[in-house]
Length: 156
Image (cartoon, rainbow, N blue to C red; front, side):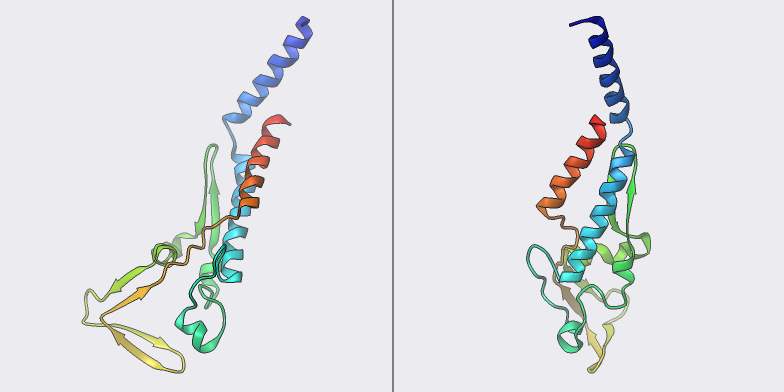
């Protein structure tokens, strides 16, 4: 191998190494795709399996996890040089975990939880169990594309 070939190889490896230290560009692209995946999950009512419908949807139609649109529209991402996170914005963080994982909400400072169900009226309960609806799913084709994005970035 001639010295010019080693020079080209060294230059290419150096460029790849420099890119490996700052993956923010491909991670931003991946973050945008993740947000799209999460919003699609809400639009179709769960992927790969459908979620149980909320009481509101059963009674009045609409989409589970998309009453006012605030949760859906809050989806965002944060990409750094070496990581990306996607999910609801900070204003929705308190609700996000219970919506994704499910769980029981109990009255703490008062004897009952009180909430309004249209067509039914005000309801009082000591606790409410929320089924998990994991909106953070990315299908295999998206995950494959994530890898392709990073690979393309590293070699171009």
